[in-house]
Amino acid sequence: MMKILLDTNALLWALLENPRILPVREILLDRYNYAYISSISIWEIAIKSKIKKISIDAVRVYNVALESGFKELPIIGKYINEYMDFRLHHKDPFDHIIVSQAMQESLTLITGDKLLQKYYDNIILI
Image 1 (cartoon, rainbow, N blue to C red):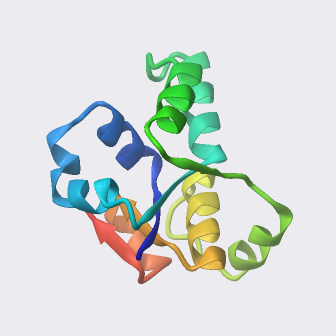
Image 2: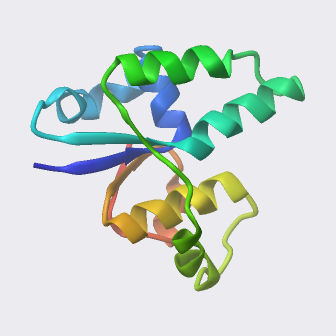
């Protein structure tokens, strides 16, 4: 059994069946694994859509993710503990929250962002 958290990019690749997700497809489909999405990923999509940086319907992404079997991992205060120890390698607050969640909950983080490896070792880079 594996507990995983998808970064926002990996979530979108999974839902859009982008070829980038193929290396972890079996992990995501394994019924014994728990696949989580962060609440902040949905917020990130919504915010970037609102400011016209992307054109993706965050509500639809959220609904399709849950219908697809992903479990939502809410943002709670205890994740600040991990964040306060970070040496900031970049300034993306969405990534900081997702990494903090993965660390605090001992989840394997699936991402396409190499920079996140500077924060956390338990990453599958796709």
